[in-house]
Image 1 (cartoon, rainbow, N blue to C red):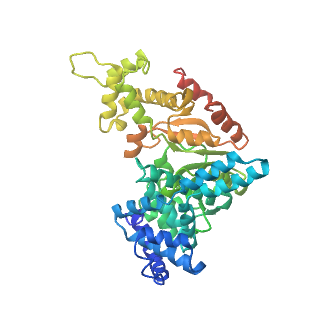
Image 2: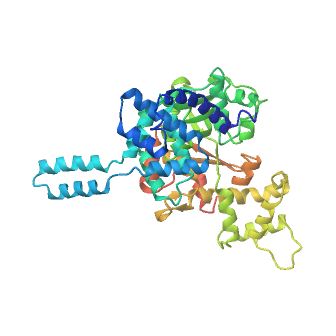
Image 3: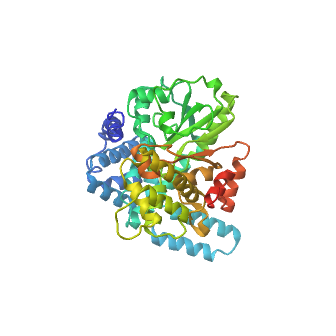
Length: 470
């Protein structure tokens, strides 16, 4: 399955195929125009010839970029960023606005100011969309740009322009929502496996299991990138809230008749295009899929996630190392010291005992230890999700997955002990997972509560647990 997950190799093969077409188009470009990157960019902006010539020059530019090494690509992007607005023209246009004698003249002056403010590089970027796979090229170009822009104001300005263009081109109103199933093209299934970012797809059998009759997978596509998913969500049709991802993805588990399911569990959502970072699709995707599944299966009563808590272990390590006096109760500290006795001469704190337990390999399989650790970690995870935060007044949930689902209008419904006992699940979330509930009748209410007021909707039992009492 390593071939299935070789995302970079897949992209390289696809781009090599389209680069051959670009090379054929670019072959008609004169040697003078092909002399250097800056000259090629100026030739694109000059617009000599006609539409066909313009496309050929753009193809030459894209093909040149793909042949460059890492340093060459950085130089290319810096050169592109250098095609900025004319400072003198901008100053002149601003003065015209300030000196306009009446509203009509001011409106005309403002229109001219807007035109001169637009840097030529935006026209260059737009020209690249006219070539085959040009939109995908720009998405991948931005992925390169994101890895290079730190500490480079010119590249940051270029990224702002490109991100704005992509945000308008990839508005959700332009996207197609499609179901992916086992009968989808093999190339698309290969991409799906390569893009899966939450629970790695290990074999073809694993992939087939995720696309069985009691499962659903939906993705957003752009008309100019019809074979490239932008984001996809995987769902399982089950009875009741799922509490273990290992059981949910068990290939040997019997297939449930979807008509007998009462719950749709969204267990994975993956963004596929690094170059579209900062352009949100996930909130629209989940809401659209909730509506689709509700129409297809009238028997579904609940729509929820089985989500990781990727920041919990890191936060807890910091809290334990920082000596948070209110982190553990005296009773909890005593039980932890009993569960993990030490030969140290000095008395050990509860925080030190918990740190030692979590650092011990195989702690999750030691039943006596688990009986002590479970209530402690579950309470601390509730606090992490519902109390800890960042931003003004700690209004934003510290956990990125919690922030995503709360922003979308979900509520924190249930914590699942040993929900993910994989190496990654233990390393990031100490084995805990969360059910976020999407109630179609209250999505907007919960969205406003979190985004507008900073409140985090949650089940009553979890709110009590987060405050330290059951």
